[in-house]
Length: 247
Image (spheres, rainbow, N blue to C red):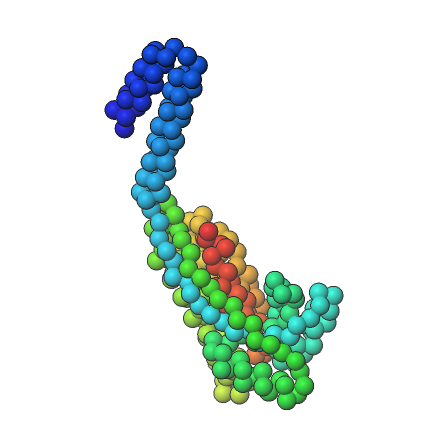
């Protein structure tokens, strides 16, 4: 590259000396600009391919059964949903505001409950939200395994809450059995947050802390399936949007 620079300068100076005109000077400057641009491109390419990066596997899909509402009526609809046994979790999307009744891991389960709602003349729809892979760059690339472990543990906690809520509704679980499950989830979330010391996890830890606080509040009182569904929906939404925390 140094030799190329010398050739470029030598050629430009030669042209300038032979013609002695303004055009040869402009030609020389143009050649020099092209050379500098080429150097810049090489540096950029080497930087891009030489840096550390890691792709985090975050492809997950959840099915939220929701009731659509206007922003002005969201609070009233959330209250109605909660009183009727739903999560009452408000969700703002590009399509407008809605309130979550429950979050499912299989679309067939969401469709079954949706059919039951239709029989009661309650209009609902299934909102599918998906997480997507994202990239960690530089020194953060070394945290790939820990980030993926966080996502997997958070989803496991969400599934525990889902199963516990169903157990309470069917009376298959006692209050104490359900309380043990919820406290186990709280402990797991706290453990994750305690181990996430790097700055990379700052925003993610905020979401874990919010879920941890809600779980603690739930476990300290009488347990209702709708409260567990609320926390589960909150966790699933955090997982779907995890890329925003780490990118």
